[in-house]
Amino acid sequence: MLIDSYDRVVDYLRVSVTERCNFRCQYCMPEKPFSWVPKENLLSFEELFEFIRVAIDEGVKKIRITGGEPLLREDLDTFIKMIYDYNPEIDLAMTTNAYLLKGAAKKLKDAGLKRINVSIDTLKPDIARKIAQKDVLENVLEGVEEALKVGLKVKVNMVPMKGLNEDEILDVLEYCKARGMTVRFIEYMENVHAMVDIRGMESDELLAHIGSRYTYEDEGFDGHSPSHYYRLEDGYRFGIIEPHKDDFCKQCNRIRLTAEGQLIPCLYFDEAMSIKDAIKRGDIKAAAQVLKEVVRTKPEKNRWSDPDGEQSKRAFYETGG
Ligand code: SAM
Ligand code: SF4
Image (cartoon, rainbow, N blue to C red; front, side, top):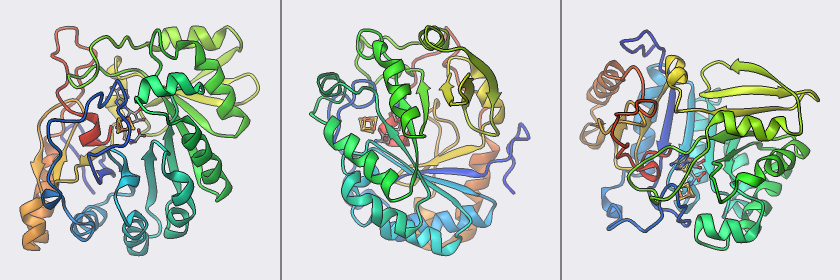
C-alpha cells in the first residue's frame, strides 16, 4: 500500500497519454505551445503499461486516462485492454473533450473502459466555438450520446466563467439530469498558460444560480473525490470542485503520470520525478522506488487558496488536469 507523509493512502493514478489537443480551451491551452514534446520522447503504451503494473502491484486501484486529448493517441483501446487484462477490478476511467468519442466509444467500452468524464462548458455552439476556439459542440454532444448508448457511465465537467457561460449553469445541469449524468462544476484554476482575462466563479456564486430554481442539501465529500456534493429536492446529485478551498486536499489519493514519464505528486506544484529511465532499462525495482519517493513527498495541500501564492505554472494539458 502507498501511504504519504500525511497518512493519506494513494491508490489513484492519472495517466496523461499525450499533451496534444484538438481544442484550444481558453482556460487550458489557448495557444499551441511553442513546441510539442517530440513523439520519440513519449513513453510507448508498452512502457506506460510497465509502470502501471508496478503501480497496481503497489496498491493503485483506480486509473484515469487523460491528456491533452487522450483520443488523439492511436490505439488507445489496445492500451486500455492491456490494463484491463492485467487486473479487471481496476476502476478504469478516462477524461475526454468527446470530439472524437462517437467513433471510439464502443471500442473503448469493449476494451474494458468503465467510465468517462466529458468536458461540456456550454450548450451553445457559438460559445463553444469561443471557449474551445473551434466549432466543436455538435461532435461533443454526439459523442456523449454514443457513450451512453454503449453503456459507459458518463460524468460531465463544466468550468463556469463570468461573461462566457455563467448563464448556462442551470442549462448544463438540466441537460445532465435528463440523461442521468452527474455534473461537476469545476472552479477555474488560475495558471500561467490560460488567457489572462478569464474570470472564474466560486462555489457560492454557482450555488446562488442553482438555488434560484432548486432547493438543495449539502452532502459534503464522497470518499476521496475532490468534489463537494449537493442533492436537489428531486434526488439529483451534482458536485462542485473547489480548489480555492483546500479542504479536498485532506482526502487526496492521487498522483499523476505524464506521457513523458514525469510522476507528479500534486497538480499545483512543479515538482516531479521521472520514471522514464527506470522503465526504459526494465528496472522495475527502481521504478517502484521512484513511485514511493513521489508518494512520500506529496505536499499537504495546494496553494490556490493562498492569496500570496504564485500562479501555478503547471500546464493542465500536460498533467491531465
Ligand atoms: N482534454 C480532456 C478534457 O478536456 O476533458 C482531458 C484533459 S483536461 C486538461 C481535464 C479537465 O481539466 C477538463 O475537465 C478541463 O475542463 C479541466 N481544466 C483544464 N484547465 C482548467 C483550469 N484552468 N481550471 C479548471 N479546470 C480546468
Ligand atoms: Fe484540450 Fe482538455 Fe485542455 Fe480543452 S481542457 S485544451 S480539451 S486538454
